[in-house]
Image 1: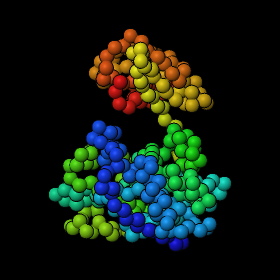
Image 2: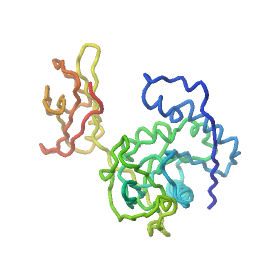
Image 3: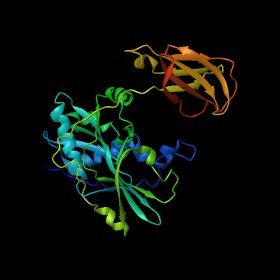
Image 4: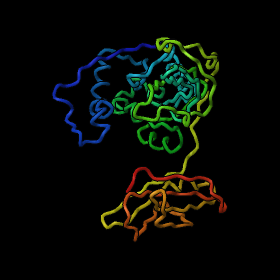
Length: 312
């Protein structure tokens, strides 16, 4: 199996990208993760590759302080080939590799060998044949969700992508955690399974880690995680609080209900129980800085709890 990497250098425009500090933080700090800049980078790469009909193209993002082991690209190509073998009618895939290394750099240098339940940039990618170039141009690898479940699958399917993850890959992506940076340094909450820790004496040792026994000659299998209960909250022009859930998709095969509470995390301002519609509107709550907490019930027993993102 041959895997070819082309590095495409580019210069940031002297005049910037047209975003200001008042723009969304992602646009201001990471403009090349968003259209149209991702499309320009993709087109520039194509000029160097000159793909032919038999080629498959992989689109993947990698943060500038993370590391790939020497075998990572070949293992991505192997996963792509396995997906096409097992699902030959599919044209485009979003694939996630769960097995990973996390390197914590502090007074000591420790590398955890783990299986992640959230797949991060550098270990998830889009793959398609050259016949799907026009679709691939508009698919940003930074738009791939971290959780590979049926909720995310629904969104990917709208643009023709089949979403799958595997837990049988040989780890080759190293997520570098440099002391106490602006995000939570430890990522233990992301661990689905922990296999062990390597202690390094020099940071350069992370460039080639001890080989894992995973993914020797194993035939890769794929899965998608079950659907999760979701809730969103908004405030309309008249001050009413609108709560939207994916309840109907959760209740397709069984009898369920849910409750929703508007809260600031300490005090509850309104609660509605026995809900069986996707949308609920709540009047009479004037507080700001609140969110919606929803609890899914089966036979009066709580089976899932979730909250809306952000505050309204």
